[in-house]
Image 1 (cartoon, one colour):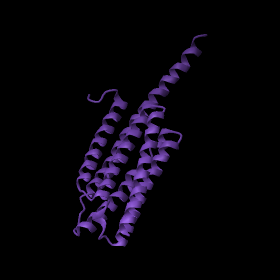
Image 2 (cartoon, chains in turn orange, brown):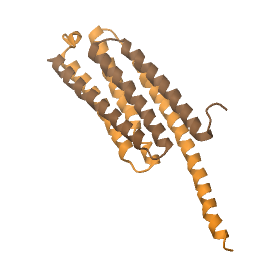
Image 3 (tube, chains in turn blue, red):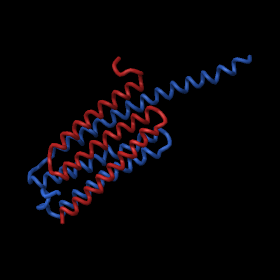
Image 4 (tube, helix red, strand yellow):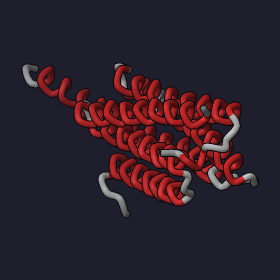
Length: 122
Length: 93
């Protein structure tokens, strides 16, 4: 297992491990927030930990590792970082706007339901 | 030495990502309304995209990167389509 990393210097291995654990740990913390926050509008904030520094850390670890093992600059992983950074706000704003729309529709429906029984006796 | 450091931290990172995916799936099954399930699906896509990158570092093969890129693209399209569906009730108007 991992024979391709035999010739890697120790400090590079420590750097790669640091960024890997940083990224994976932040992603885990974000999903714990997703599971534990009480309302949807709080819940939508937590997973952005995983999409900002979670992805950033793992992508940086991959860049450092492949640059060190192939002894040339390998930065195509940065595509994933750029892509996730650009698309996450778009999806989350679309989702939040749809949920606002749904909540307003529900509130209007509830007001109608509250009105009908009070108008019946009169 | 560096192989030991890398393989242990890789194992811990992959276990963390797998735990994150399990927590997200629990939220997707429990989620009180449809929007919670859509948000959980989006997070599940992101985590499932990060896992192949760590597999790529473990095996030293570049091709896992392309799988991760495709998963990220499909996740974006799926979440946008589901958000449109929640907003209007249909995907294509």
